[in-house]
Length: 141
Picture 1 (tube, rainbow, N blue to C red):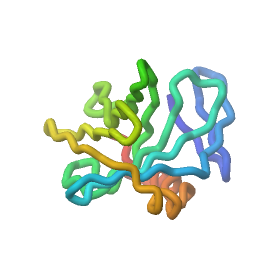
Picture 2: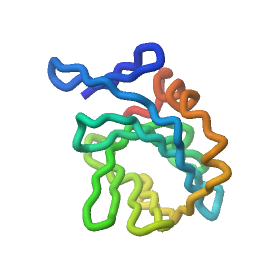
Picture 3: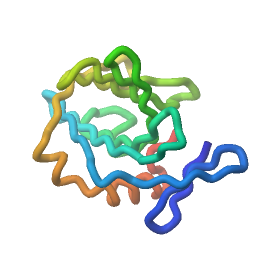
């Protein structure tokens, strides 16, 4: 799978088919106790089973800092996993196990408990995060 970002829209290539997608205008920001912060933005599409999102990671002192990743939401038993590929393997980057309980799993076996930040969420510009994702070294490894 590969994302293409024409002008303001998005499309996902699956084999030979391109599916129309839209970047959500709503972002969710979660922060940890030592300055860790993630921003999660949904990519809207009714055609996909695994809901794609963009994930910006900051303040973790890891290889992920400042990078934007494509993650996919998978729901099961009131739990939401946001997974991605990292070092050629599947990785659950975020796990939301109940309202307000979010854990970020980072490289080097580090995990951080995060809380939702409503004020910061309202201040996010999703298009700026999309531009960062599209830029060279935008977070794909």
